Amino acid sequence: MKEGARIEMACSTDSRTKGYRLASMIYDPVIERGMQPVRKKTLEISRLEPGDKVLDVCCGTGRQAEIFAETGADVCGVDLSDFMIDKARKKQRKSLTFIQADAAATGLDESSFDVASTGFSLHEVDEETRTGFLNEMARVTKPGGFLIFTDFSIQTRNGYKNRMRKGLAHSLEWLAGPEHYRNYMDWMRAGGLKGFLARKNLPVEKVFHMNGGHILIAKVMNSKSEATIAKF
Ligand SMILES: C[S@@+](CC[C@H](N)C(=O)[O-])C[C@H]1O[C@@H](n2cnc3c(N)ncnc32)[C@H](O)[C@@H]1O
Image 1 (cartoon, rainbow, N blue to C red):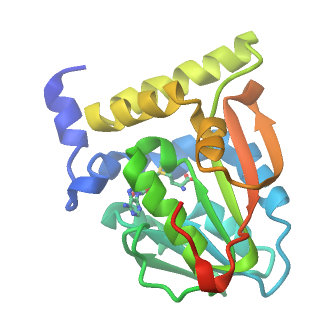
Image 2 (tube, rainbow, N blue to C red):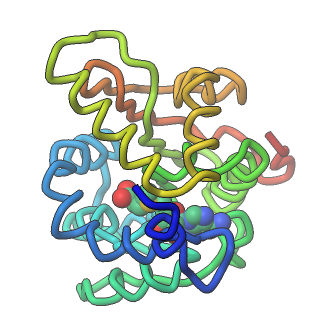
Image 3 (cartoon, rainbow, N blue to C red):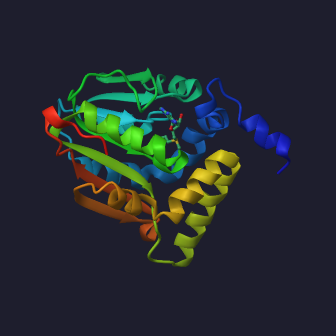
């Protein structure tokens, strides 16, 4: 692809979310088509009940948040990209709201959610930013609540279909631009989501492996006591 096309795609109003203009346009009609099994598994592991307060961090166009809200949970999605949040706000449903904010500093109240979830956000950013997202998720979630992570991890079963899916994901990460791609490669070299959970010593309650392990969904207990919300 010509460099000009990659630069055109990297156009946004905030340098941290550059590249999301095109993504916001293709997400629902193209990417979401293949995401349904992951969305369902993320919902399943979350075990939400009506009235639960749920935060979807880096919610993108809001499809996972919408699926969470279908259970009767009270769901808030947060994303920094104006393009993404505009698309998300078109998904109108009772008890579903979206705010535009930095996931590392949402301004939301401490311990105000039962569950905080983030999907496919960590691999896209550098380690310091990932740690910021994690700290904020732990801060806004009640002690004893849950953190849900869905992201790329290390493939353990290498069948033909799984290799194809991994190749497609790899190509999309490259198309998203050089910084995005560098963060993705660093994430994968460091063991993907499995490596992140280990580095941060997170108490994992349950995991689902999908696509031969290339996608991992993990449920982590937010075990920090309110008085001592420690930094990871
Ligand atoms: C690949 S999309 C994932 C969207 C959605 N979670 C999903 O599962 O499809 C990553 C999202 O992270 C958002 N993002 C990146 N950096 C962010 C930040 N610092 N604060 C909030 N959102 C951010 C982007 O705008 C983008 O919508």
